[in-house]
Length: 412
Ligand SMILES: Cc1cc2nc3c(=O)[nH]c(=O)nc-3n(C[C@H](O)[C@H](O)[C@H](O)COP(=O)(O)OP(=O)(O)OC[C@H]3O[C@@H](n4cnc5c(N)ncnc54)[C@H](O)[C@@H]3O)c2cc1C
Image 1 (cartoon, protein in one colour):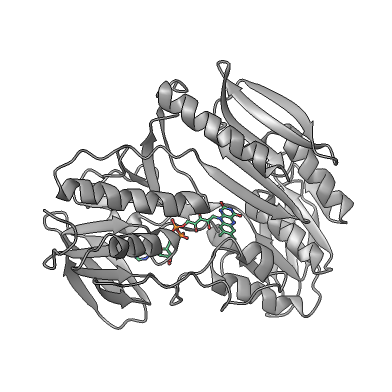
Image 2: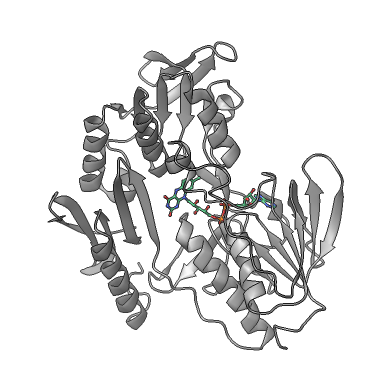
């Protein structure tokens, strides 16, 4: 069956961020002329650049209007956009999804010929830390705007968690001139991602810019003294401190609980095969939520990076299209890539360092920033650098081509 010109099909796209946006745009680009119901989720905003939240938006360099993603062209498809609406259930016995309005404005079952699950992740916030004035997580534009509102009062800030978002937030808040303490549960910021060498580099940058750090510490309690009063933080060693603004960077959890009971693998995100097809032949996944078999690394993985979400979304549409045309789809084999901006430096990483058994560190550029290559059984599996885009991208190409010629060699 031809993809273009089939006006009888209905496709539901769940998720209103990069992956969902890209699925809609790709269906349109390929000439799909049926119905697309785009359920964009609870946020009630048009898709925007999420990475800008912890960087340019907090720093006041962009606004909510300038970070919007471009609107898909819409050549022939019939698009119905549902905002303030979530996919709440997948019928186990029929191809239909229950959509509920978050403002309590009713629900409807929407039958589909294909469903793309692009519901991503939400911030991980322990129940005891939820709803406290002065305590914020950062996943959505609304979260970022709530934090920004607080900055005018020049708050003493504590950032809890030193992964990508915690480290970026510490850097951005510091660049706004605020006093910042960064609580690092492990030994070094970003160490679980980058390893010790770049973790040490990241720590030194925070110190050089006047951030104080609390290493090897866990926040065990938070309490707030009223809507504008200080927040008291209690640590695992019993010490207490106070702050006017606490930002939690404690990671994120996948938003796929709504698929429970729908006959799909939900053991870590939404399980798919190498071509992003789930256990139901007409249900596909893309973006942060997708857990797929990576042919280059010979293992399952989930990747929480911006460029992965768009590339996977295009590939999921290709897999759907292949099914329409009776072709076997190709595996999604892109080597993961992400970046992080802190204090005017661009950290970039490619590949998948999981299970590496050797690290080589070189110094690059006039500033001698570390460039780290990660090996497994003698083969390059990942690389990371600071302000070294060309070197990082060369390694991406190398991992991609070596992996594709000896597929799955990194497994084990
Ligand atoms: C502050 C921040 C900074 C980041 N910086 C970087 C960076 O520098 N580099 C990088 O590579 N990556 C970065 N990322 C990660 C990147 O933003 C994500 O990888 C990307 O947003 C994933 O896109 P997605 O569409 O898969 O999911 P998400 O962006 O999580 O979007 C999921 C969408 O689904 C909606 N939704 C949820 N549940 C439902 C439901 N039941 N029904 C319908 N809709 C639903 C949500 O409201 C949302 O619109 C950052 C993330 C954050 C939060």
